[in-house]
Length: 362
View 1 (cartoon, one colour):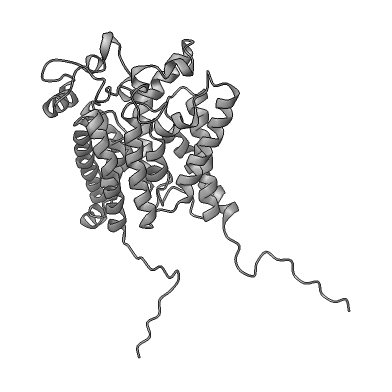
View 2: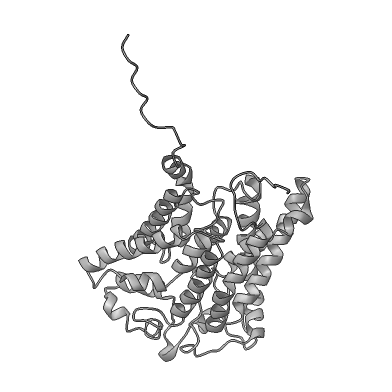
């Protein structure tokens, strides 16, 4: 009889890095398909640009650092980072902005820290924040979803506007954002924040076209389906044990709690919990961004604290900050706190931490 011994931890399901990365990419597909349906082919084109740029940048940096190129490029970490950033970008964003975002994500936030496993911050969110701060108008120029758009955009229109700034018919982004009656639309989060500064209440904002066609009350047209699609992919990741439930659950529960407190204090000014959950990148961020195994907390209690704190900052920044969505900022803020969270939530070593027995007096 042959006895095989293995070192701890004794994990039943063993996956290498490429397998994990591919599973996450597969889980993103329902959400990407939903985005493509509601916002056009630009999402796919942005993904292709981002993936190509990520592989090129990472290959060049690895060559300069004299590191193995083929093995690193085939671990799919650069591809996943590129996709996470691409689906967060407006589908009509100029191609060179996407390349800049990928440069900061792959070169600055990942490789300059030592590569995969050494980055302190989520690379995709670093690239997103750099673009949002540098090009705020372009980064908030989302098209109206299918159903309320008056200028449908074809695949070739998407290619043309990304690389030239105009569709094949000569329309620019501002014209594509125009819906019925000449009104220029924005995302639900943008619309609410702008209206509140102009004295329009939350209840009145819900009557706007961008917020009057969702699957649920107070969910933006198209955005509720996209959120549910990413929720489906996230649940698959939990089922297959690619990620743990602690961060997504505590993050969404935290948003519900703090948004409910504000909404009950003034329903005309503060958005409902359902509005926060189904609009923007909250569910996508909960399952695919905040759960990054490198930059997130690693202890069970730490993951709960980490996710809850991200949810808190999302509600605070969305409500009182200058930016309509806050997932990227909240994740980066809590990335800085991970060492402290892990230090105070690490499991106690067996036999340590108890008071020693007092010695008998001689």
